[in-house]
Length: 444
Image 1: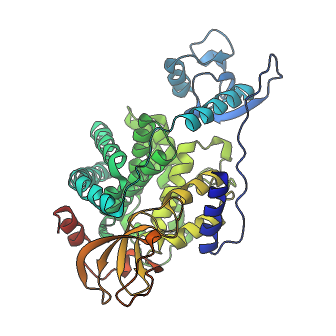
Image 2: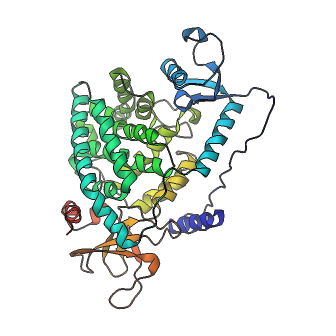
Image 3: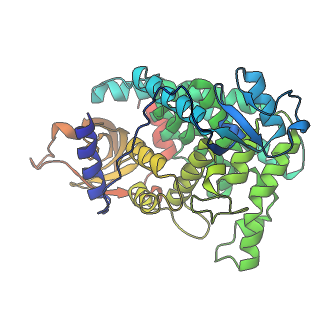
């Protein structure tokens, strides 16, 4: 298995034009110890879980309703109590290693989500079966996020319970078949960038969480982080957000304030998990400590903060903005890989690239004969040869979709092997994508 993964990464990095070899990810081995010297580790309270021993706080122990100045967490209630009073704590590093090792073992033994092995025809059929439900959820989520953003502009209460319900429905769809949501997220309106971007970040974050084998509750929390991470932008003057030219230094400083504004709004709202608030605060912080707004060190960034930072940047790069066109997914992945470690979490970047592949599900590609296709699914053992739904003929005119598996080495009408010649940005598609998706949903 490790050999196959190494070969897969080698071909993937070669395609992206990257010469650096990925570092081997070291696993944690659990050792039996009867006694140990306490080594303190500073972590955000969002990473606390049962089994950890807290030995120091970011405030006096007397501020908390506890008897002793040390606590080994045994219940969810104790986790919530610490999250209520603290931003970060210091734990006994040995307890952290023990918990982390057990989590790795559990994930290795019991994968929560197993991808079915489907033929191209079955993959296409699964998409058509899920698309009507996904379209209903997507449309409701789109409307809800637009309403939510307007409420933030007015300083009104947001309907957080509806947000949670819609995120739960998105999780249902993605666990069934994420392709449908990926395809629907290709429908974009440049005048609604912020709200649509938040929805896409929520969808892709859930899918990434699924790939990382996170439990359902964490998928829902991660999705909520995604759809609310940019609410602070609704307080940024629209003429700055929609400016077609370069921002002045003063304007850029105003834009950067959206992280603080979003955090304060969500925190003051009440009833919103602290992790959702900190994701809004930290999604522009970076691993080298040079992000904004606080230039915090990486140990204060939770896994959710790091995931949202990656997905937020990826979607921003592949989307059209008022001041530039989006770039193809393959180029965005290449940029992310080159700054892993300095800007983004190295392990999560590698996992993200491994999940989306060179040709992410829902991305557009042009084949060697000029036909355009949309990626249906990624072949795990052959990332450069996905399953594709052909949507145009060689003259770029729409056709009834045909699903093909490039690992089967199909040929065109002239008998030449069909292969992907290049990836396409969304703006390079010359047919009505929304109309096409509606046609797929209706079986056309």
